[in-house]
Amino acid sequence: MTARTVAQVSSEKATGAMTISWSEEAIHGLGVRTDVPTAGSILGLSRTQAYEAVKAGRFPVPVIPVGRRLIVPVAPIRQLLGIGAPHKADLIDVLEGTAGPTDTGGT
Image 1: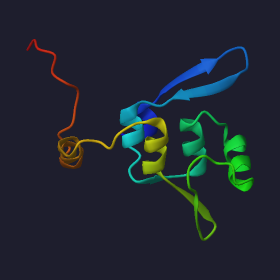
Image 2 (image 1 turned 120 degrees about the horizontal axis):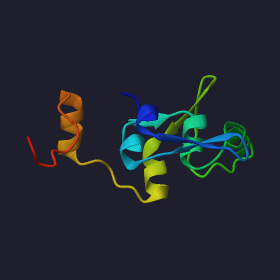
Image 3 (image 1 turned 30 degrees about the horizontal axis):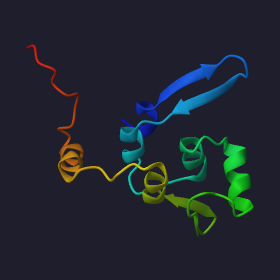
C-alpha cells in the first residue's frame, strides 16, 4: 500500500479541484524523501504552486536538486507540521509486514 492510497481524497464540487488530506501515517509512509508535487500537496499547494515556490526560492522546506530531479526530504516536512518521527517499533512492524489495524476487541 502506498501513502497516497492511505490519504483521504475528497472532491470539492464548487471548484472542481481535488483535495488530498494527509494523515500522519501517510506522511510517515513516504519514507525519507518525496517529490515536489507530493510535498506541495501535503503543505496545501497545487503542483503548479509548489514548482513556482521552488523556482522562486519560497518553498518552505529544503529541495535538493539531483540531476534533473528535485528531491524533498520528508523530515523537514514532519518538523514543519509538528509531526514526530515514527516509533521504532512501528517501523519494525511495517518492515516485517506485521503492521495492521489495531485490535479493538471482539473476536
